[in-house]
Length: 280
Image 1 (cartoon, rainbow, N blue to C red):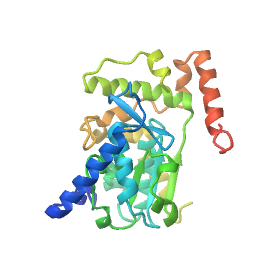
Image 2 (cartoon, rainbow, N blue to C red):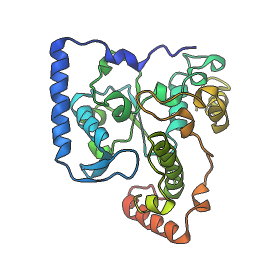
Image 3 (cartoon, rainbow, N blue to C red):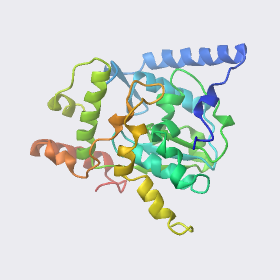
């Protein structure tokens, strides 16, 4: 079954006046970002920029500004917020299946033919990537995903009562998983791989049976073995779908990290997460 709504509808032809207005906004964001503190990204892009206390890839930082100016949240929205390689693909599948549990039968579900990132693209990576979409035409309930920090989310997300679903992962496991992912992507972009040390230096349902059906549909085994997740790319990026599935194992970070690396990451985690109830 095809998903009843595609995000491509958000980029319908605009009037010349609207296009010129959006282009002026995009140029303004580009100029603002060019004046922000800059460092070597050492990942996919050439540079990262510091904005409101967090580092973003340069093009994504421009998107953050656009989102702050243009995105209008609704109380029925669900926002999936994650850090890289912390379970975004899996949590997207779960949220989509739960929100749409009455709309699609499990045996003919959109997740069986569409990658979760295609159904719920990252706002700053796909939707606001050098363009300004018309998200008002999307019917409720809407589901979006982002890696924008909480302090930089558009105010309407905070004020509207939108649901924000945040998932965290043990930093050691996330670090190792992200290192593998980045080297896959660097190969796609014809960039040399990073050594491990180089990267370390930069670091209740009413319907009976529905819960079990969703768990089976969204399990790592099911999602990673679907043909749609073994071929194709994420829209608007050079990233292949299969790159988002590796092992799906808890504790894999200890297989590569030295004891010194583990100690350093634990210290950073304690420093950054102290007082937020996120220490695992």
